[in-house]
Length: 197
Image (cartoon, rainbow, N blue to C red; front, side, top):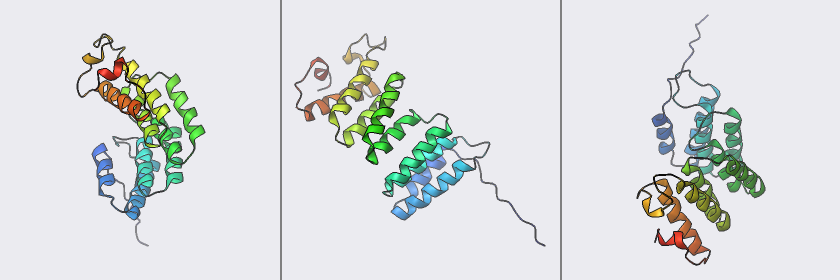
């Protein structure tokens, strides 16, 4: 009777996850990458630098690239249920997947939950705003970019002045995105737009 050899995978780093994603080029490769990432999430290594939620979000991205919006949504739901931090906030990935799957009402409920939590990370506002923008809900995109810019301007370092936002900062990017969406909505320029044109 032969001995059974168990293979234990190596701990995963963020670089490993990125490499898996970048290597996938075709829908079949994206599906394979998603399956691998999901399996890694279901059997975590104690020394992984990434948690199951982050692996599930990465797997969801791969399913999205393969055109499987329902599968991507299911993995985002699993990522939220798994807990753990996925920068900037695991809920923004669920929100995006809901919009991509045509679940606008559920996406709005998730967005409202995010808004009520008053996130300090400006990338949350950018992510939600961009998700609305790519699905052509420009009114909601404008709302989220404005919320994020207002949050950025509460930073004492800015003194409430948009000109004081660092050139490559998330706050400045929110201002530029807000101005872009306002133009697309044919809204007249306001005092904040002047700082980003």
